[in-house]
Length: 130
Image (cartoon, rainbow, N blue to C red; front, side, top):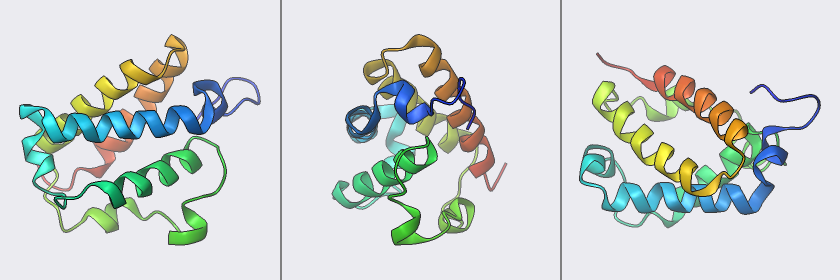
């Protein structure tokens, strides 16, 4: 993650309140958008637990408190997702949900663009099939 000066992305976007809203809007979109059905099918019926995991992960990944690794260890994202076929369609569906959530929750335009770029790279890296 890159940041402006010494300010973390976590601080730039508004901290925990923004991360919480971002993740909630992301999963709300995943749960309702027709174009997200391909990724919604990969999740349990109840999204409550995964919401909390993503909140902890994004908090730490953006430079906030270490909430994820103290509980789960190294993220090993590709390893944790290897059981799911993630290609362009899945990556794009995930990004549709995330971009909509970013638009709704991250007020600072430059921070939103920077975060979108970083998250897009992460989504690209998660693909494990053509």
